[in-house]
Image (cartoon, rainbow, N blue to C red):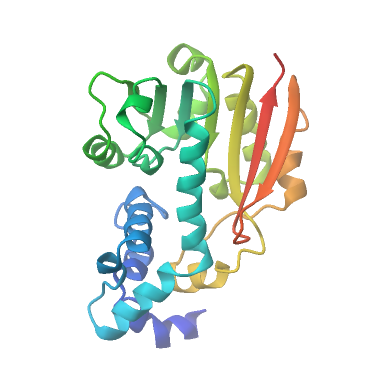
Length: 258
């Protein structure tokens, strides 16, 4: 890795996205601006070829066309469909700038009661700029994500929810910690409600590019490990597993008994 970086990093850092992923100016990998760069770059050609040189612009576009970035775009559109069909009381844990809500019609958004948890105020500022939230039951809650999840009185803040999801968070925790987090979130799911969480798959085809170029490391889990984090939960009516079309992210969805 050191030899690769010594010879190739000067070129990849001419790509706006690769440089940002490597530098992590907000102090952590995969921040909300990283996700926005993927979203805008995937949708807008003018935002795709951005860099400090011709090579950098090309590498930026190539990176945004890799499976991991495609999987991030898929995640947003997949979530948006779920949000508009699964219950009204929704919670997003580690919500970032809430890209999945940006294009939801105002009339539909008004019918939802949404709790959004993140620890980056910048993410909330971006979300407020892009979401039409006047008169809507949308609550932004800034807190340390892990401390909030483990707090015994969190139910008083989050309440019982029809749909809770946490995507892009558990990739940074080991299996044991993931099981603990999942159990804590499960306690806030209403009867008949759903909990969905994701994790990158060990065979992520973009894994080496992320690690060598972006210094971006995830805690990969197998399908068995993902499902194993839910085996001790009570009142599980259904377990669903899905691997996205790009072989990057796995999704586990649990339905609670009525």
